[in-house]
Structure formats: C-alpha cells, structure tokens
Length: 290
Image (tube, rainbow, N blue to C red; front, side, top):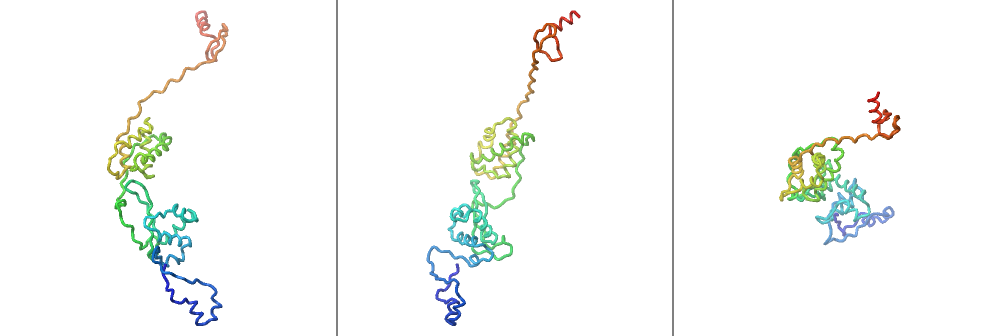
C-alpha cells in the first residue's frame, strides 16, 4: 500500500492549528501511525485497495493473493480452508478480480497428462475498457506448455448397432475413463471419450469382455510420451476389431405338453388337444371298423 509521510501533519491537524473552532465539525476520520516495514511486506496499489467497483471481500482477497509467494495454492478450496467466507463467496470474489484484470486462471495439461489450474496475479492491470484486455504480462512458457497447434480430427472408430449402443454406452464410458488408472498418459477428455465410446461398444457387442478390451488398448504402449493418446486408442479399436461371433440358429421351441383328459370311448386318460375326444387306440379302431 502507498506509504505516507508520518512527519507531515494531516489536514484535520493543520485545520485545528489554524482555527481551533474547526475541531467541533471534525469528530472522526482515520489517523495513520505508520512504521516503515523492512521485511515480510508487499507493495499494493491504491487502485486495488480503494477500487470503487470491487467488493470488500474481493479487495481483501486480492491483497492476500498478491502477498502469497510464487507457487502457493490459490484455488477456491485452499482459500476456503484459510478463511471463513466459504467456497461460494470466495468464488464470487475471484470472479470479480478476474473481471477487473487482477487475476487470471488457466487450465493446462502437464507432460504426464494431469490437468492443473495456474493462477496468475496481476498487481498492475491495464486501464482498457474490456476487462479481459489487461496489461498484465503473460506467464512465461515452460516445457509443459507447448506452442498451441490446430487440433486434428480423431480417426473414425467402428460403429455398433443402435440397440447395443444404448445398452452398453455406460459400460464403455466407464472402461475408457478408467484407462488412466492403468497408464496416466491415457487421461481422456470428455470429447475424446464420447468419440471413442462407440468403438468400445462395437467390441462389447461382439461378445468381448471388458477385460479383453482394456488389455487390447493398454498393452505394449510406446515408452515415449503419447502426443495424442485418443488417436492411438481409435486406431487400435479399428485395426484390432475382432470378427463377429459365429451365427447361432435360434433354438427350437419345446414341444407343447397338453393336459390329461379322459377318452370318451374307453375312459382311459390321454394327452391331446381339447378338440380330441378319443385316445389314439380308439381313433385307430374307429378307422378300421367304421
């Protein structure tokens, strides 16, 4: 915060010296007792501490973040564990700081495939009209943040029947999501998972077990970093697709078992439809001796 000269009299004090009667009209106001800091301090501009549009919580949170050392956690959960305002109010205050250029948060993927949030604190935002356009310098590029390249479309994957897609969609999605437990490099985005799921379903409907599908996707992976893991998985789903199971003729329905009934000719019990009134022997005798 801007330091003040402690030896210079305040306006209220000079007014009292020049005209003692003025003290009756000045009953309040801050008086600074400043001591120069020599360690553990940070310089914060009055443009933040006296901002006319930021809330008091946003101003205090902005000052706190500017005082943190480089690399200290500044996510919502970490700040909520430090203060009593709760995640909802802290998230709203962080959005205020982002709107006015004091904060920028970026999601980046590390070399191991893990997604992290990088918080950039700007102690001197620009004065342009658009909040997103600030003079805060961009963070330095590291090995984990390569030059952006146009995203290529993923290779096509086998398509299942519509009935199988509905029944096995959740099972295929869970299988793809769990691949990162076998190899952290196989961390897939929601878009990649949605693209690959039909290919997994095509395998499952061919009577391949989930364990077999998982082994086909994770076995013998390259030792080097996977630049496009989703493209590799799409290629394997297509190139290693097993043949459909052999055709099985539907089983013949079991013979109909009629209820027992008594023969009208000999009174013997026999099984026959309700339309038959005589047993087989009686029908044969009637046919020989009409």
